[in-house]
Image 1 (cartoon, helix red, strand yellow):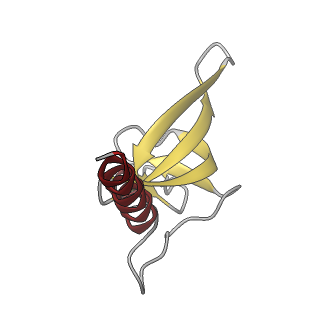
Image 2 (cartoon, rainbow, N blue to C red):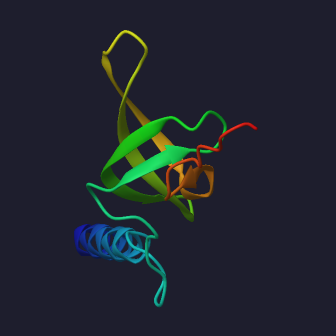
Amino acid sequence: MKQLVKLFFIALSLFISQSCSILGGLPDGEGFSYQVGEIVYYKPDNMPMLIEKQVYKKNEKKYDVIFKNKDGQLLYNTVLEEELLASPPAKRARI
């Protein structure tokens, strides 16, 4: 009986370790659009942000970013890839 319990726990631990390793990374052939250290802009308000870390959770590409608020304090957030712009907003002169 003890051997059966040991065998069960060994099988359970192997299954858990394999499932964690499978879920840990990006699917083959996919990559992040932006690199660590790159300056990107938030789509809704064109806030400049610095990418600190690339994150892949729940089948979504996300980035841990750093930005400053109006008071100059550093703030941290996690933003979806779809919510970012790589190039700065265009400044257009009004005629």
